[in-house]
Image 1 (cartoon, helix red, strand yellow):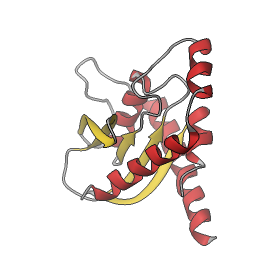
Image 2 (tube, rainbow, N blue to C red):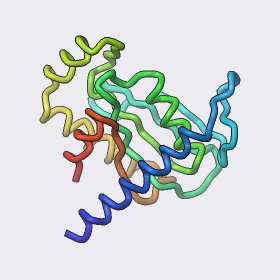
Image 3 (cartoon, rainbow, N blue to C red):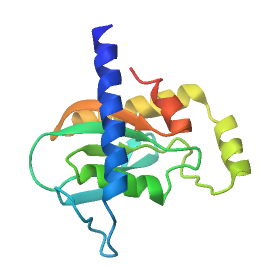
Length: 159
């Protein structure tokens, strides 16, 4: 039970940090971020079967907390990728998962369709694979998860 409370507290802290980052950090056209503490490396990684997610982490060597980021019902879009980069610029190693197999939408109708057709067991396996992927990264110390709306509800399925 203690571990579950620690997980909830860490998740809440990550949400607060992301909120403040999103408020203060502004992306530049060059791809770097203003007010960043760390330069960031971002790349697509295959973490679950043939599904790729967005891995963003500080370029500088060191140990950083890991975050599994779960997208909204729009899918793993540019906004989620940019948010992963912003969080990494504050000293986190982030993997933004893709629960919709590369599908992204901007319409509520298609988003509802994507969510309603989601295989929940596969989604849980997908997110757990992301946890295992982050644990295998040598620069990760500790883990939390983060999501908005659909992603916020989904992150409750993680251990």
